[in-house]
Each structure stands twice: as C-alpha cells, then as structure tokens.
Image: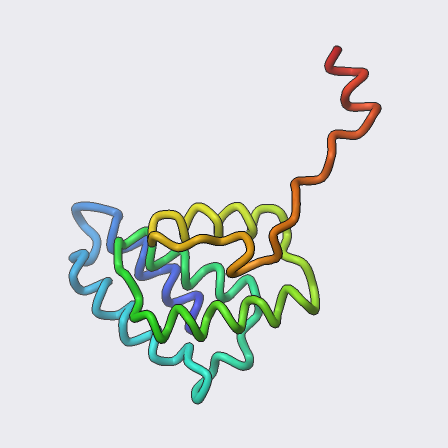
Length: 126
C-alpha cells in the first residue's frame, strides 16, 4: 500500500543513525507519489491515505510537484464531500500542508469553524 510505504519511508528517513539515509527515503517517497496520480491509483485512495502521503512529504521536507498537489487537493475535496475528515486527520493535514506552504481550509477542506464549546464544557471550566 502506497500510503503505508510512504509512512515507513518518512519515519525511517528521519529516525537517525541505524536507519536509512534521508536521501534514500526521499527518493522512495518520490517514486511512491507517482502511484498517487489520477491515471494510476489515486481514485482508490481514502482521505486518510492522502493525509498520510502529505504528512510523509512534510516530515521529510519534500515538496511534491505542483501538479501532484493539485491532483491530491481535488481528490481530498471529493473525499471530504462524501465524508468529513476525522479531527486528528484534519489537524495532521493542516500542520503538514503548513510545512509545505499550502493553505488547508478552503482549498483542501471546507472552511468551517471548529465546533463550538458545549454549554456543559463551559460551565465545568468556570
């Protein structure tokens, strides 16, 4: 699975001594990204798999080609139109895109506000 291998490459490429060289991890990640394009496997990717791919690129400091980011953005928008991202995935995507110089809300996911604090939470915090 492409996203699982991307995750492993990012972790191994940043693990330090005793792991793979960062350049090797970056080369593997670049090769994996070619499998996540509209004419290859991208139409079958879940939103979580896309988040993992973006996270892996951010962790290794690899800027994907703009065409690749554009394709991933369109796929993410289609995925979140069907099913909203889980909070942890949304936070990971926002942080990762920030490291890549991308705006998340409005471009990758709908620009919605965080859920309002419930009245019970507000009372217990007081």
